[in-house]
Image 1: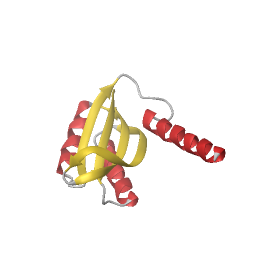
Image 2 (image 1 turned 45 degrees about the horizontal axis):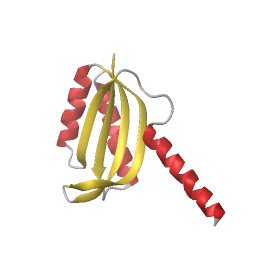
Image 3 (image 1 turned 60 degrees about the vertical axis):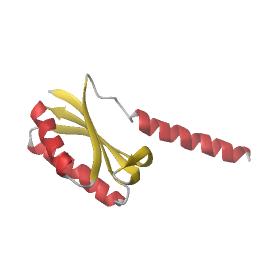
Length: 121
């Protein structure tokens, strides 16, 4: 089985529940095509480097997928149709990261720095 990372950006005006529903729908698509989602991470609402379809921010979601190439083809087809998704990218990887991704570790590090700074003040 091939390993993939699928990241999509959802519109900024969606609620967190709607973003979670998009991730659940992507998981269902993968499982219906004999694949498996090993990890789902929601990175939250982040600013974009430039406007995409009049959006300055987007909800970022990453899925670690295990399965054949047909799974990715179907997932990308369904994602392309969905109007709530403004960008997506799927890459093949040699192995999935254990534990939280780099983006999640960055959030934890930033929170720690803020709390350290507040303690000094």
